[in-house]
Image 1 (cartoon, helix red, strand yellow):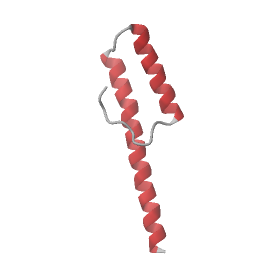
Image 2 (cartoon, rainbow, N blue to C red):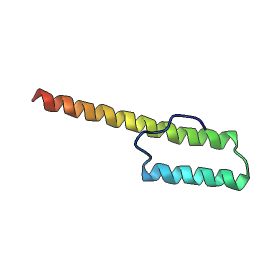
Image 3 (cartoon, helix red, strand yellow):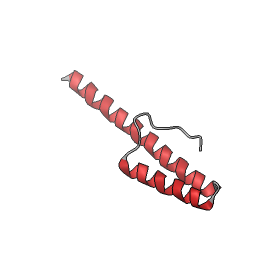
Length: 67
């Protein structure tokens, strides 16, 4: 579980999903490849969300400057 981390943190839904996956891992007593992939997918979605938000913010700022 070494994927990129979001810079501004996780949303409540992402935090809940990560908590659930980590709890499942704790119940099993060891990490599994499947759980690891699921955790990495949540992290990747969070990073993509932040990138999308950054692009939208830059777009709005550029539009504001053009006015």
